[in-house]
Image 1 (cartoon, rainbow, N blue to C red):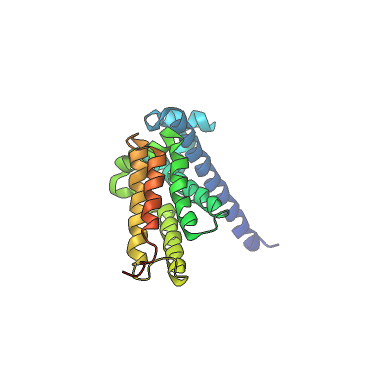
Image 2: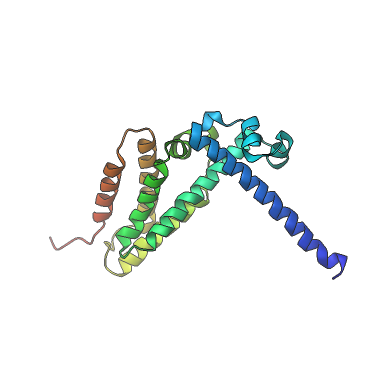
Length: 207
């Protein structure tokens, strides 16, 4: 193999190592958050938790603590979607598959500090920098797909706007997560209310 041929492989390996280090630091941040809350996350604590130096933290996250927390936030978002997707594996109806996203949100809030970080502290810290990321986008797409398929099968009112309703349901998931994280709503009440919303999408019977 020539040097030219070998270079892409070497570059790819460096990139994989860089991404692994970033992931390890984000995980370290989440470990601190789960144990003590987001306010406990500092560069020194991150370095100690990950077994790295302060210089290594800044080498991979030039923006420091805020950038690490944003990466941690994205990791939690992916975690919620992954949990929902696992729950859909055993679901047999469109309602159960959409409910999986509500149940995933509840599962996240069982870790109070992590749930609070994802639903309350993170958005407050980042403000407009928290975009509809891969997690919310994936959830939105999955819920919309379930609604469209259910409409084609006659299980959801054909007059329902799948695009608009999926956006509203994502909003309900987010607000429900906020209320649970603030301990202003019980998870069981959230799940029951969300189920009622889905039940209301059934085709209308003859008047």
